[in-house]
Image (cartoon, rainbow over all chains, first blue to last red):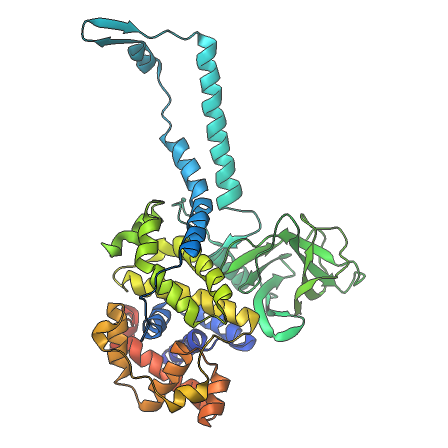
Length: 292
Length: 185
């Protein structure tokens, strides 16, 4: 029995690698992976496909210079937060002893005495150092761990692992809540285009939406907002489940935290709104829907 | 030397970006052109792929693959995502042309990575229809429906040939994991 289930999982993974999966197959794959958690991070089939995909590839043409320059510019953006952090980490505050020893340096027979700084000047440096540390903490929390967007891909910075990943929390939520539902999120204009799926537990009043194909948004112009249409509410004023931005590539998991109690959800909608979200949506730009 | 590039990237060493571009720029550019509808799309894809490579560099496991194959995997993921998002086809010859004139295939020694050479070798062990369908889907980027129509084969049969072929190549490359081998003992 177990082997049959594993064979089916392998088939689904192979289909996903070669042709992609339908919404139903995706749900089946998710369930199957829970039975075989060791497969969660296995990408041997993808590596195999990549190796086959290299067949006959002519790599003699290098990147055009203009494109190379664009990639370098992207690298500057990508590595900048890490470099800022590294600079702060490398900052070594001078202790009183080192300050004292540097104040007088002997070179040959000449003794040069560096001007000693009054206390208030060192106090200024201390404040500057504290500001650097505060800046680093701010950068760390706002750039590498955004509140509403958790990217599955490992960040380059080696951050201490959280106690429980969103994936684990999500699985636990499913296991613990007998009313949890998992439904695919589809493009309303093309319901065959699955953009991800969501998990919702009415008892826990919590859930997660996982997106794979939602395009990145320009945060200066718009934000994504998640809405829960509740049977007890006017459909024109659904409950906001949170505002989020997609700036990263790859899979994104968005926690759903409604501001009001959800009694009987019938539909989830993702809309594009002005930056920061709105209280009532005009529902002009609906990008994903899930019927419960 | 090339094998350490991703480790340096993962460690936040920005100077490794140049090596990364020198080593894999041509590879990523070729894959992007093969799997994009036009050159503008290919250029955008290349930029996204390199960001993906930097983000995922820490996941590289040298015991599982070469850097080249890992980079190709990341590139393929992004390129397929882009194609599926826009529902567009890669810029390739028509399926009829490809079927009429099968690829001669480079000598194995000319393939770009160890795994690519081994995969090309492993493909020879597959049944002809498995080999053909894998080539059309993975190398040429055709959908299962297009392949089924062109080969006049049921959709399910196309999928079965493709998945069995892929799983077999994976085993021949020795990429099936230890827990699977234990399970079959």
